[in-house]
Length: 247
Image 1 (cartoon, one colour):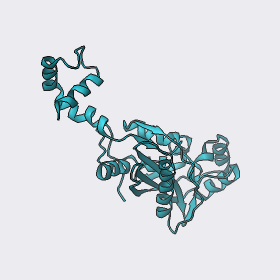
Image 2 (cartoon, one colour; image 1 turned 45 degrees about the vertical axis):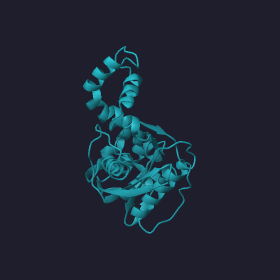
Image 3 (cartoon, rainbow, N blue to C red; image 1 turned 30 degrees about the vertical axis):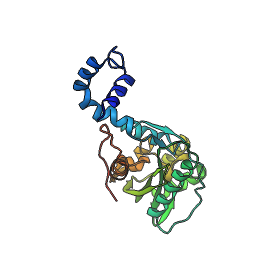
Image 4 (tube, helix red, strand yellow; image 1 turned 120 degrees about the horizontal axis):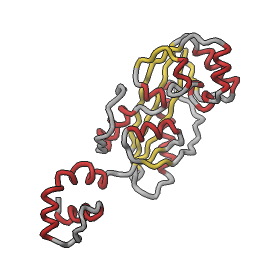
């Protein structure tokens, strides 16, 4: 590492009260701190900023839990599209969201787009149109298995290079009573969630068991996202955890 780079980093992070050009003390500081600077601190300076192309509080919470520093710019992409399979649908929607935000960007960044759907009997369930639709969705899921797909896209805003992948989790619901469905829909929780339930909230009481990545059902498979960032964009975050299955 060039000595000037170490000087700048030390100065920027306020290590001690030494002046920038106090060479004797700077050299001593370098010998103590280089191993740290080549890790978390220097890496944080060199890595591109992360943009989450979603206003979802659940996705924000997952990124925060993983220790990823990011900014939110909600996507305004048209999500009214068709695809032959749920896997392709969620990846295409994630790509559209990331691309819509990249077009607004005036700085270099990595943009994360994500989309989640529920699928049962080959039918894709998005967010319910209202309370009646939410009740119908929950009645259909009652006592049965379904699949949750989340597509993840990471796009480099500078060169438009994008990587899209998906994760799938199998979920089995308990048998629900009409009264219980009405009570849950009355909380308002299902109205902005794919499949009309939120596993991280009151909706967890509806679920008997899952097979796969829990974060995927919430809306952002953290393990899959980490692998994309590391393998395709050389973005490393030591605080993040490796979860989920790769598809």
